[in-house]
Image (cartoon, rainbow, N blue to C red):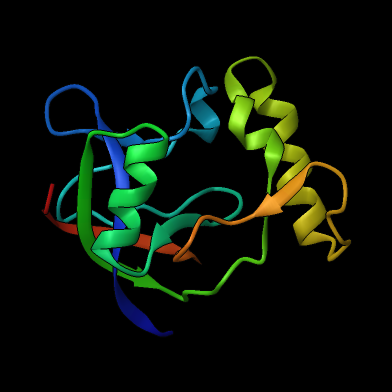
Length: 134
């Protein structure tokens, strides 16, 4: 299991709980939460993170999020494509997430509704935030 220092863009929730930044209105079973020092492992799929602080900051400027974590990721990889459906999850979140990960897990190619991942995007099987850097 490889470990790597990465950066994760999140939004502040209540107390010391943070949520994935680019997802609003998502059903609870798909919602990933983060706390400093605690490891988050998704029930399905992987977690998107960034290789550098600068790439995380650039993503935050273009999309949403108000906090950047520095932390430890396990089993990192480089996604080639991400689902465009993830950009509009407010009304179609269950379909978008299920479609994306079922397609990926069945090793079929995603052709419709895909775009290049933001610069520096990595995926990982778990993420443990160690500190807030922004």
